[in-house]
Image (spheres, one colour):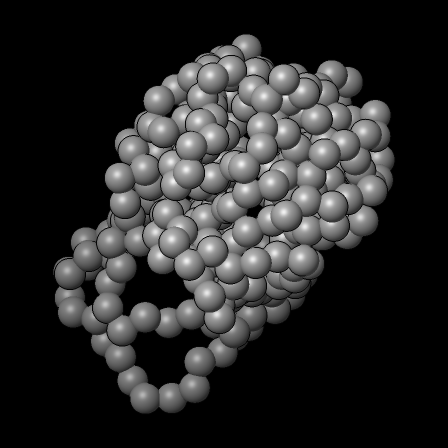
Length: 289
């Protein structure tokens, strides 16, 4: 006896009906309501609709938030190494990779340098200025160098909008960065990435105009910059996300503190992209989960 609506994963309205839900057998009409009298124009919806689903049970607020904002999740488990496990089912490809049997959770994807990479695309949130985002992944490096997460508007990794978001600097320190349109805003966190196998390190970069940028390593905030309140997005889609390699974007003008001329050598597990800023509680759940 409760009716709720959500917008972008957040509660938007609630109603307590005075009578039970009345249902009937028949067809469902999408994008046209013949009983609706608009203020102007037509009662036919003009725009785009995607990922329409119907559930046989009421979903929890947590489920709805995760479904609305988890843009992609790649566990990198053996035969499903290129499969996005979330509802968006974004496409992906990879080159010169290996499957690590002992990942952080089940299997993981391994990179050997040179032209070894994983790439996925879509992600409209990176085309919208000041849209919050979060990037989460587990890594096991063999060398302290190279790009971990690279963004670009072309599959080659090179274009007017291209930038390594997470990687390792020339001295082996972890670096995370975004652009405000004129400046690459980098943070360097030294001594947080061990090389001892089989140690795994959890990295999360979050950003929102409200709280700025936060960088977590193994559930610890190693850097918080609330003054970074502007994020300059690409303005177009699709946007490509490349792991372990900047491809032709290596050494370009937009590299910041990351040594993008080198490819990442090591393994990655449970890679996730969110269209919202993860809270400290969210990051803790990912780390402990």
